[in-house]
Length: 132
Length: 362
Image 1 (cartoon, rainbow over the protein chains, first blue to last red):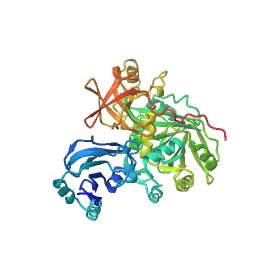
Image 2 (cartoon, rainbow over the protein chains, first blue to last red):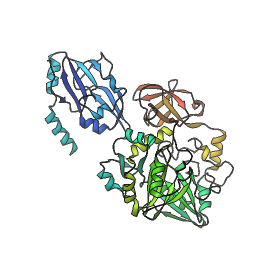
Image 3 (cartoon, chains in turn orange, yellow):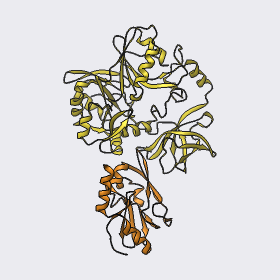
Image 4 (cartoon, helix red, strand yellow):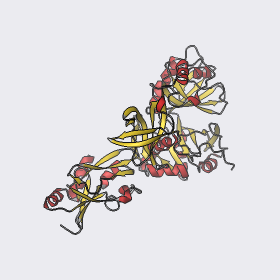
């Protein structure tokens, strides 16, 4: 598993994308819009083991707070420190500068999990259904 | 659900809407943090049509207001405004309102949307034999706030009027229709609230939009919180008196003859509980409902909390036992299981508000 992969999505509105030896994780455009203007982000500690579906981070807007579930199991290899001073990047660029944390690539079970997430077209159809 | 006469304009501007006190109102237009900063630094517009507006007329209007509020109404000069509370017999707060004395024994009351009917009912219940007419003018008169340090130029150019002093009103006009320009607000910044016939509120709002940024209730809430202004339903309820709520300054301690008088004096002389402000020492955001602890014991609950957008820290308010309410007291706020440290602080949290600035000369 290497190189830059396509974004895949969880039912909880997180995305995951292979990026070299790590998998970047963030929240979807739909999720950032639903949360509203993000003013504070609480990220997991580097080195912690997380399970798929586990609440590992929080995004807070002026209106509400939302848990972020890890879409995959793994070890947190890095967090996006720049969100501390500029949490609004989650709204402005949820799939780029607004990434939240990175998991270390660690084998075939994780690869199966990643493949099991929705591709973008499926996710967008899923979101459309939620809206109706 | 009732909606503002400006609803179609808000929709055109792509406002994000929220349900507030049964009204569908704008939560934000471009985003709460942007709108908040615009009001602190430039000028923003708020649609306040959801608020209740009452007119009291008749020779006993003052007497009725002196019975249901603890404020000095007799000493309120013509064309001046006073912030006060409507009290029930046990001193509990039915609403917090602004009373403005107009000419000819007319009083204008601005009340909270959620309490409009309760205030009207309370006034009727206690009017007794007084000669007073209570008219709900909320539909025929609309309300807009223009808030921010740059509001003076905008108001002068559009309404052609002298800018009133703090807590006073002037008469302006728009398209030759008279309107009331009131130097009041809820942002902590220099600004006014306009009371305008609903028939002209849309063209007036459109004209204001050319020079000011529309703001939603989200920014209205973050702005008022940074000033430590209470919000009915959060800091103010029927369960607390204005003394406990830190509103002793608004009480006329020299007079009697109003509902709740004895309870207010008792709370002043032997206080047990007091609304305080607090600031987090580190990252995090306190929210309404979070427990407040001292020495591991729960001593209170957060009534309002959010990120102080101009302060850069989480700020909030809570009722605490009087023994723990001094500025500098260390608190622990339980934010979803995380224990965050805070200090009791006397509001405002934001110290550079321009609300009381002298009226600038043109």
